[in-house]
Image (cartoon, rainbow, N blue to C red; front, side):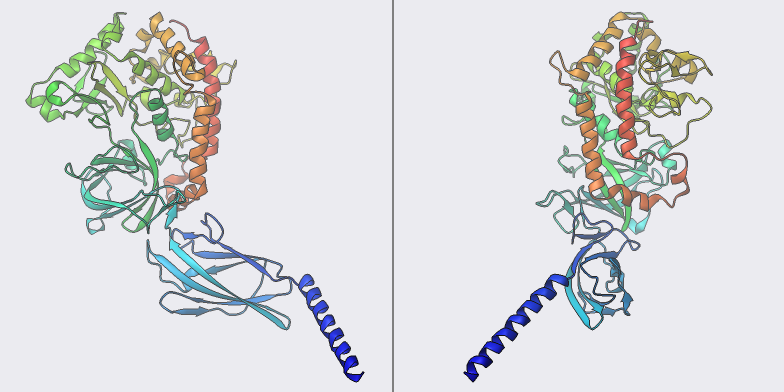
Length: 561
């Protein structure tokens, strides 16, 4: 009987203990911790880009019974770091530099021992941190190391080694600890006005005997990297080129990349094809068979046409042309211009569909560089022995200039979507002459012969003659409508759904890895970075949507002049 009572008492104590323990767990749940950094793509994915962004952020929940914490960090070399006891909050930050000597492009493994302290209680958490120095990204990396660490500042060619981390991992992202391609060659700064920008654009040459296919683009030994200093959206060239290519014409392929130069993060670039001859590039014949590519310039030309347009030889080069006394390149362009001026059938000499589509794309994306002075616009002689344009340098399009429009600057209104006053459907547009207004059609670059008078010289010095021809005007209107809504065997390349979804997808990718933010952090200390207005990619997307609405109204109103 005594044993039965003791056994019963023990059972009751055990039950009470279990009940109390269960009750305590219900009222005092275990703290929960989540880890990330400034540039984490997901929880526990650690990535930093520089020595100013190495904080491991820890978010705590169910930690109300704890008021302080302490931690110990150990790195892969066994070095330890312990801190003093600190006051606890819902989110704490630990600087990984305290335990790790950062080795660029390499994996780091850190051990974190975090102890939470409360009144009469403590709880220790062990966490392994796989820590990388900017090692993963939704876009490829390009790592460049120049001879003696010389930075490319002008067109002087510098020897360099290149590593292209362009092979994606299973999750579609790219890693600087993963597979790569490499090469050696030269690098130099490129561009005209862009040479003055702090963030240079570059030309890469891997050697004629070493062409490689990078990021799925056609093999080549010549590549360009565009810094997009004035295009803070990093959208202009990529979307414009891809749209023109969707129309069935040659548009240089390109991909966004993150660049390291001599061990320093150099920011977001557009990496792509250089305009060059080749079956998978600009498909013109070999030079000995009459093929050529020329570039319209605003500087010193190799020749000037009858209308005053200025060109430089791209292929073959000026030395070859002079040595072989080639004159038919200039003659072919002059013949085209003469026929336009005389109202004759210029389509015999030019790929009319490509030329008109180039005009359309120039207007849709509001690119004054194609119109204003013609720099960086190319022509080549195609396999059908006709002149054909190559789309290039739309960096000023989409309304992205970083200066502020004022004093009725005509450029503001070329861009219709970006001036302080810009055109809307059924609304007069501010234009060239003070307070005088013109209807929307006059704000089209294609349809406005007045640009020649106002700007002195431009890409389309023949525009007035173009607009006197009903066939030219109707072709522009018809092809715009067909590309906009689909028809006559064409897909709706210029539809809102196509262009805006293309733009949205690019923004989503570049936002997903905080790449816009990284690029801004890299360059915001430059004085010129703060000159004028910097547009967000979402603002540029909105301006593009407005431009498409404007174009529908303006093209409909376009008439023979």
